[in-house]
Image 1 (cartoon, chains in turn yellow, purple):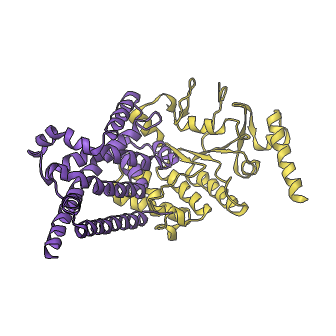
Image 2: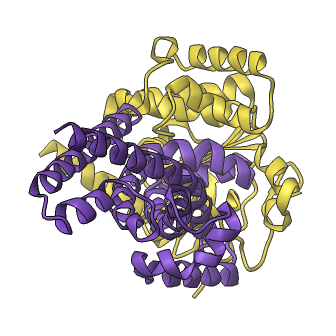
Image 3: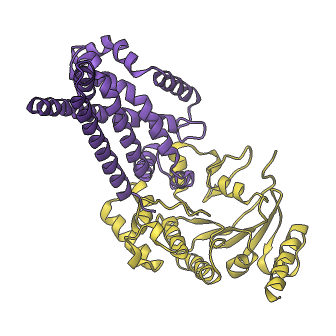
Length: 236
Length: 216
């Protein structure tokens, strides 16, 4: 069985690229391939010219640091405070303690969580946890940020603030963002371009505006129809 | 009464000594074996099929030997390690050998409870296997590890009751020799009472410690 095939996607630097698809379309597999948790049988995954699919050991570990990942489940460490979670990638790459403290303070400030520095993950709200995860993903100044359904567990208001934060990540740090989601709303809010994933294939790739006005594939049409369906149900 | 008190005191010290030393070595050995069992699993961060099968087999084999038999079966090994096959020190060797595979299983279970997503997050952050062990597995699994070591200590107390078979002394030995063989119900009852107190204290301390590190 092929989970993914013919996924040919090039993301411009500083672009916010959406990847949208219903569950089962292959979004998670794509994410796992990009961060090299899964090795594709064939093909390449290039980040800044480095092929993550064909690196091993120390080289792979070094290459991975160019990639920040925000997992759907966030995967924060329960045994660590917000500050210590953000410090983890820095510790792992052997950065000196005083420099780590500085960088963590900077990031906490940037995501607006200075006061929550010594709180454990379980003591934070969903939105705050999401911010810690974003700060952790950014700590090593990655060139690409991979966000897996960053808003699917959040309420409308928190969703807006998290998306706003991702927009600032691109604007202020020039990071390229790949946003994997099933929500058209998130794509419309911050993405420049979007790829529609259906049954393991990219069935169309275009600007968000083109998707909204001239969807070509059946999958894209279904996604748009679903959105109106949702709007109508809400209206009633 | 005076005689009873001094007998009880002496035996309590022997039991605590055996259990404390054995617990220390068993916890270290069990942690190493438990970690290896988890890391070498098919989806583990150091997946190694044959090593894993080998460790599984060894662990299961060791687990299936009744302690009283292990105690006498490994006498040559005991003599090699501590120079003698009788006495309290000689009882510690089989206690450790018997407890390691047992606590390794408990530790394996504790480490498997660590969220796989968190391990994957560490992998994508470029962590080395050592870093994953020290910065993720051990701290994230700490409350469960403390519980595992608590259970192991209680099991060691019960194992140590058989140490009398090699002249190891301790409370179990006192209960058998004085309480049972010399028909002294007072010795029997007070021995059991002291054991209950020790077990309760261990369990209470273990629970408290585990809760301190639990950040739910």
